[in-house]
Image 1 (cartoon, rainbow, N blue to C red):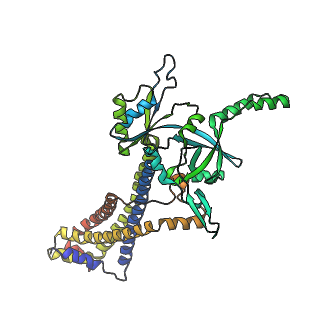
Image 2 (cartoon, rainbow, N blue to C red; image 1 turned 30 degrees about the vertical axis):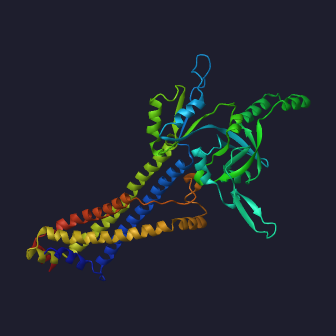
Length: 458
């Protein structure tokens, strides 16, 4: 009698032209839909979280140590710190790959009358600059961000990617920003210091409106803006390197009135995931002066990463209701089958079949429905994952709306990463809910009195 419950469960699942077969198929479809949606959504969320994290590590400074006191070196304030000595000390630590000086701030870029502000970092162009080396991997290679070359004999057009060179008066910006201001690799851009522009505006406003035109012109001549002509030598992919621009360190120092000082020292670590522990250790060891602090890439973007994780958890619970609906469908199927098979249940009980064997028949039936639905759901989920970007394009063409905008999600395509633990949890949850849903009506069916069942069934 060991395989009898499974044999009867399979027998009851044979397709027939009856209402039971219809609701059984509906139950399988419910399980398939629940599993497929969960696989797709969880994979996309995991993929976005993973890609976003890797993207941040790929262009964001792992850590930045910088002065936090505005009165450093002033009477009564903290003693001035020689950043060069601090740089050497940090670079010697085994956890750190490179420690390089940087100057960061905001500039205003002008091209053909278009003016827009952009955050920039000033860097030294050295081989041991790990930040610079990883940024070079994001150079845009499409026609919009490269140098156009026309063969004078054949007329063939080709494109050469820009070169990330920060030795002279050069600038590197994102391809998106370049398109916004109408700039291409090789163009010379007029870059203004943002503080200088703000000061210019204040000085212009201070000139009385009733001033004579000649005197007003003389006053405007005395108002100057710190500007430099910088050659655009390369563009970076905005979807993988962010919107920030890069200039040589000496240019940034001039723009931000730093003289020979710097905004901070950028650190690249061997293991960026350990940045919090490493920086805490450095801070507590007293390596950093009292007037200096630090920030990490996790602190800068931790809220975004945590938000993604919270959305992923909330989505899991919301989509779990689809599985509950599928389980209710399985329960409805089991109730219908037990009612239709009431006489057979009475016969089996009269022949000595035990209650747990009766329960096993219908739970096995629900388990088979769940397994078929899970397999179909996995197949459907992975199929949709395979065509996710094609579907995105089709929906955008039909509705005119991008369901995965790059400005919000920072990625040009929909990522996906299927975690094995998520997959096992989804499958196990689906099967467990279906088995539990079938257990209750099966238990009541097993308690039926054989005489009553035979009488009612007859």
